[in-house]
Image 1: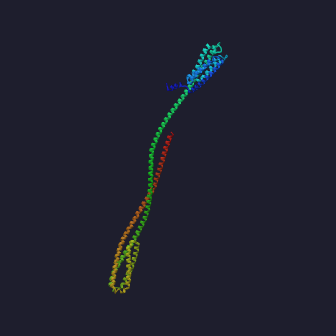
Image 2: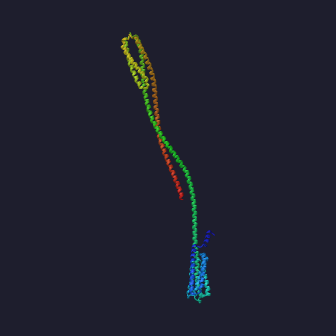
Length: 507
């Protein structure tokens, strides 16, 4: 036997609550109806004067007989059975009292049987219907054969009346009994079906609840898995995003530093290039000045050499003059020519001294010593000119002053020798100055070339620095883009995790 069959069998023994309610209402009505019939029996008995006291007493006993079980349990089977029996007894007492009434009323009293069959159908209890029909049959059998006048109008056709009423019992009681049975089964079947439906609904609801619990558990497990996955994803990807963010931040800072350094290098290179250009210009100017100075020194050296030669000539002339003075007395005529020659030499020496002074002034600090010598030469030339003038004035007294003239000529010779020595020294110094000046010019030219190379190199460095500035800006821009992408990635990660959490919360 299956569980479903057991459930159906157990439900078939259960009475419908609606049927129970109907039986409760019917029992209440039937109890009131019994006590109403007590009054009817008493009234009919009072009219017929047919054992009034006995009939009323029995009617009250029947009513009490049904009321006691009703008070205990109004829907019990005992209550239904006692009410059915009491109603049938009331029907018999009514027939008994109606027998004392005029002809025909006793048959009307029989009609209550059909009314009671219909009324007791409210119990939907075939046993209650069977009780009233069995009691009525027994009542008619006994009274039809023993006391026919108590149930029929006359005794002549008592058997026929009995048979006719027996047929009524069969025709009315049988269908009522079957109808009560079927209605009872229908009530119970409907109730059981409703119970089965409710039970099925309950089981369905229980299954749905269990399913909901399982789904909730699965959703919770899924949520936990998703949460774990989200946490793992957030941890792994978040660490990557953080690393990218930190790296982009460091790259951005390094790019800024690189850009600033490139700008500084570019600025320094530009400044160095400008300074190199200035130095190159200055060195070129120095080289040009050195070349001019070298030319001036060469000219001075040439003039000094010329002066030295003239000094040698002057010495030779002085020596000759010394010899001539010794024979002055014999060569007075030649003194004039010698004086003229000395005058010319003095003028030329003065001119050379003037030129030497000019060149010394052009030479600057380097020509100061030479300027002093030139000044002395000039002074000496002036003195020579003055001496020449004096010689010309005193030429007439030369003869008398020969000895003194010899001394003067010797002094002149000594002075010329000193001039010659000084001129030689000046020539040597100027030669050294020329060599130094030429070396300076050479070094200045080399320095100018080196500065040009440095300037070109600095220009290349400046150009490279400008390129580095552009590349540094590109790196900075890339770093900014990487930082922006890192921020967007972080925002998208948070949005994805938020949507994932929201989807979990919605489920």
